[in-house]
Length: 123
Image 1: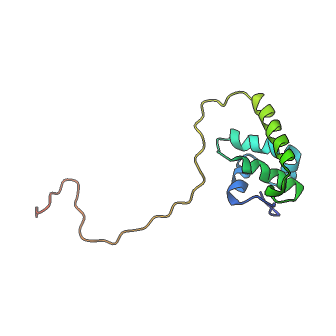
Image 2: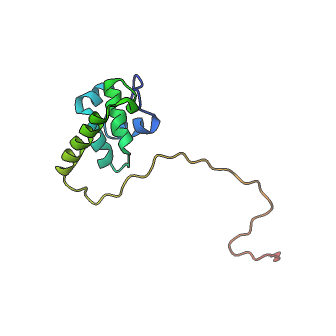
Image 3: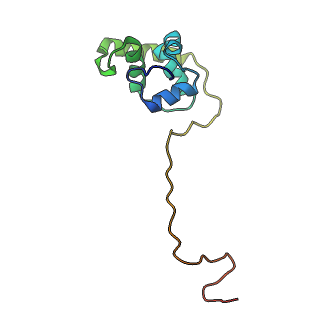
């Protein structure tokens, strides 16, 4: 998401939403929490139901844990109904998790052996 930061939406969730074309609050409002959640899942990411609740909380401007139980149930029913109408995904592998990789360089501990060198030979 760009522009103002939405409540309940952290960096990972924002990255997922950008990946599926939802870049602004207006984009999210136009599709709704259930459709946004479905788009993230269909893109191959593996969000928990907390994302669905967080999206709804962002739209209602409340913390996702403050959503009433009946609203959570309604979201699940709406998601199940919408997901049942979708065709199965087309053989694409699931997207990998969003990660950051850090590498460390080892200090040189001595000359490295070439593939064809054997220890102790001075040729």
